[in-house]
Length: 161
Image (cartoon, rainbow, N blue to C red; front, side, top):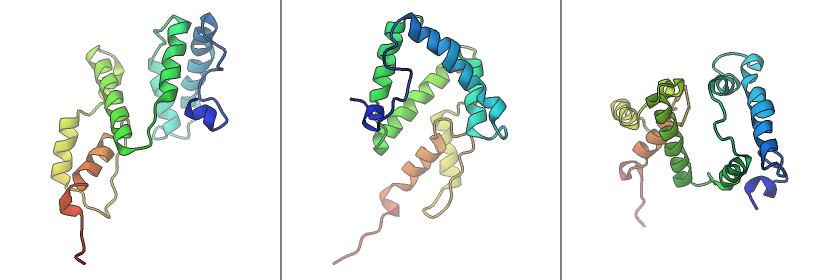
């Protein structure tokens, strides 16, 4: 049982869709619905606007409803509770965005490579108690790398008994 079912709801398309009906749902209902988020957004800096922009650029390339159902079921099983799980999902997301950019599509223009993020973090030297601003928050790369930077032993305090 996936997380969505545990919470009493289903996070994706109706569970019974598996073949052409699933592809039809994604192509004709889900993606158009998500594209309209741009129109409903209060401004270009909102998550709604960004979702609409992203889905305005992408098309469903998975034409087998059975394969699509299998992918959806696997994604539904992903967990992002621990820091390690969140990092893994962040890196997966970044790799997909980087590949989009390498293929000449728009996704890559929003991608900041991790080595560049790490260099910026070393220059800024964030400290505990400061606020970290990651304006784009695509993969939360600046937030994750700031966390890693501040997580070193030099910031931990111990008390002697």
